[in-house]
Length: 256
Ligand code: PGA
Picture 1: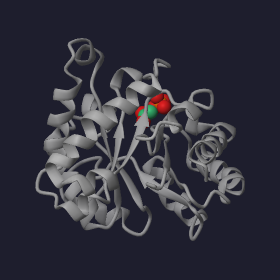
Picture 2: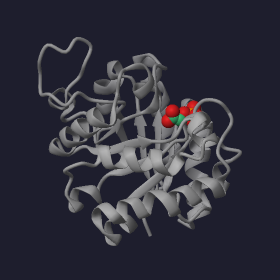
Picture 3: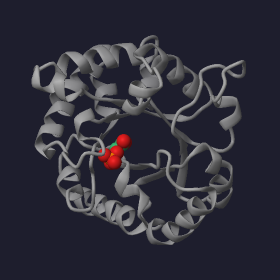
């Protein structure tokens, strides 16, 4: 079975002090769930401190993006070189960055190569807009995003990448995709696309999360879907009790 992974994307929430207090409270509640990867992605400000607090613990730290260059005149950006030693995971291609920060399939690909070079596990977010969904373009959009994001990646590296299927219309809206629909898109569109690019073995090995308005009242239904290997969570990852519930329900649904 693919190892489930639950990642909290904190976006621009929580000060350094709040981030530290959160992980100190969360850790004892979830550390026994050893068969599940558990990740928090704090703001860059909090990464060094949170990383120090969680050193050698089973709760891992991720960044919300990175720049592909090692250094340079790129105001506001943070490189893999700077993140090295602090993180294990990095989110790439989040729809908010695609919408507000000019992220494209091409920059996702550059960031992906950089993340792999530094040994970070990338969580690559893909998904269609509401207009694309209504125009029945989901398959086409996901093909294009995957082909662009995964250009010039070899099959071995590809099998270590995590994908997050996040329908954009479901993010932060409370309009979550039906669990069966998310399962179908992953099983009938995303995995077959990966199989075409890298072969069936890689497609079956790759971990694919669902993301978009996941919370403790719908988590169990997502995790019961065989194609869904975890979740990328925004809002519900900001509360200790909710995050704990998400981990517990994953363990329950996957029989771990
Ligand atoms: P949400 O965000 O859980 O608040 O919908 C998900 C995400 O942006 O990854």
